[in-house]
Length: 379
Ligand SMILES: Cc1ncc(COP(=O)(O)O)c(C=O)c1O
Image 1: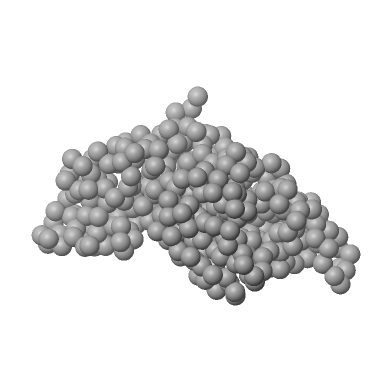
Image 2: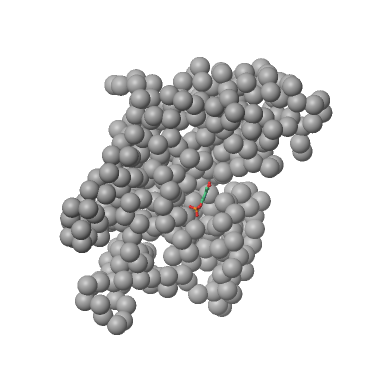
């Protein structure tokens, strides 16, 4: 088996930086550039014939590769511009009239998703503080339950099983945002029984922007007719019929012309994640996040991520004094992390990061935050 550090040369940016921001934008595999050249070559040499030579099907062929990473059967995952649009497609399958028009929403969800549900006409949005609160809030009035597998602010893994069990008990449907888990925390949508799952490619999948995905439980998909629709969702798109006749499976969730270059670029990252294997990445990620937490403890900083590895995703957050300033100075030193207002610095190592890089980053953070004015820690 290849040593994980042998993969470093597949990601050119690692030669220049200490790259610990994989919860935001995973490192670009060098192969993504080759894939983009392939795209340009097909466009240039095959012209319009490229559509029937693979471009038209790409939202599903690429979706099948995501499917392999999330335990979804072939033909159940479609590719979209981003999570917001994937969830907009889900939302557009439902009307919010009558008794069952509640959306039980978890506060730690990504804000873009919240804006979307709050804008749904007729829906009554109930915001629950955490996963336990979501379970408590679900009742017969609940239609949809949008929750997140790994919270973006704290890296905390949510108890999705308990949420699905409660939702299904009362006939509600769960929409799982797995953006912060896929590629670093194993996910099996079939075993979990979630109704919908969404995610994107920029983070742990190292696939770049423009390649969001949507999984719909196959037996449920057949019953849905999304209002956010277009000709790619038609059973016979090239007949250009005046009325919509929804295609089978994941096709019916598509809209118009797909984002072909983004789909070319994305698969280079998926290939590497598949080659290494998410179970192996997860085992290494737990070692890395545990080491980071120990190093922060030793330096006298209290990490804000869960202590229990089973509840911790791939990111460690820590609120050091003047963290915004520290973040800026780290970037000057080619150490790439980020920060969020309430949680402080976020460090997201991936399988290609070494322990030495983690030690170096914590040393630099310690030095910079000790140099910050005393008592400047934000609350
Ligand atoms: C959990 C989660 N969901 C969604 C998003 C982004 O959504 P979109 O693809 O609509 O930009 C992020 C990005 O940072 C995220 O962390």
